[in-house]
Image 1 (cartoon, rainbow, N blue to C red):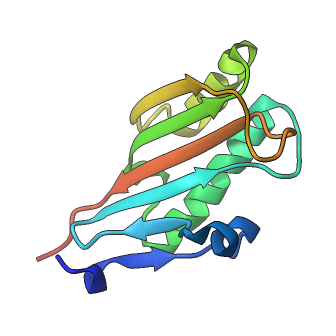
Image 2 (image 1 turned 120 degrees about the vertical axis):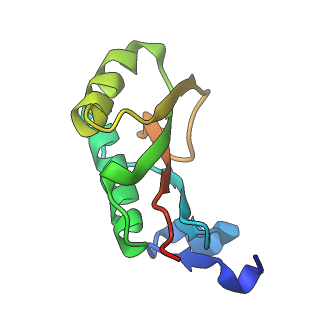
Length: 128
C-alpha cells in the first residue's frame, strides 16, 4: 500500500487546516478511520453524542460506509457523571451493530462547552 492509495476526506471543519488533519482516512483494505468529532453547538451529553456521531457518519458516507460498518468507537467525556447519557446515545445508534467501544474520561477539550468527543473506525471488505 502506498500513500497514493489512501483517501483523505475533509469535512471543511475549522481545525482541519489549522492543525493539519483529515476528518477521515480511508485505507485501500476497506478500513476507514474517523478523527475525533464533536458537537460545537452545545446541548447536553446525549445530544452532543448524537450530533458528534452524525458528523462521523457523514464522513463515513463519503467513503461509502455507514453506521452498520462501524467496528470500533471511542467516546471521550469530560465528566464521569455523563457516562449514562453518552452510553444511552451510543446504544440508540449502535445497539444492532455492537462495535467494540471505549469510554474515557479526559480533562477537557479545545472548547469548554464540549462535553464529549467521539472517534469511529469502520470496515467494509473490498471487492476483488
